[in-house]
Length: 187
Image (tube, rainbow, N blue to C red; front, top):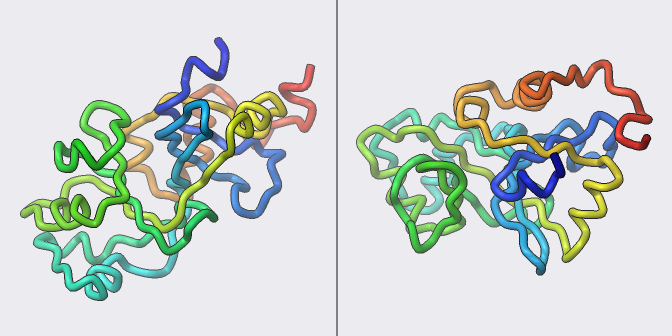
């Protein structure tokens, strides 16, 4: 099966040999990929900042107090001041990218407002920044073995602890990243 069969939406799992500090041991949710390039969000790196601080600075109040306690994630090195929400729901259909079923990605403040105003917040992630690739760049990185494409897994995305997502995603593919050889994929 070729990597392009999974793109997008897909998880991109950083190969154990990828040493770029921005992407070492990351899971990227790829939500856009076309002739102009690709965009995705790192979904397994939390920061020490609670979402409540950001909501307060935006004069937003979450209906569900659990939302304010969520950690803001590191979404990638591009535009680190721009927020993105990964959520389940029908809000923002015209302002979001569909991922899987009702899972969507949006960089819209209006969508963030709609989601945090829900009585029950539901499952969502909030990250700052994104991962971006120029035209042809992601294809080159895939060929070089920097990334392992995988199907999006809602359970992994919303239920697994962020620091365990990378290893769990590999194990779901039947690969133990601890046994990875630097020569894998270069046969």
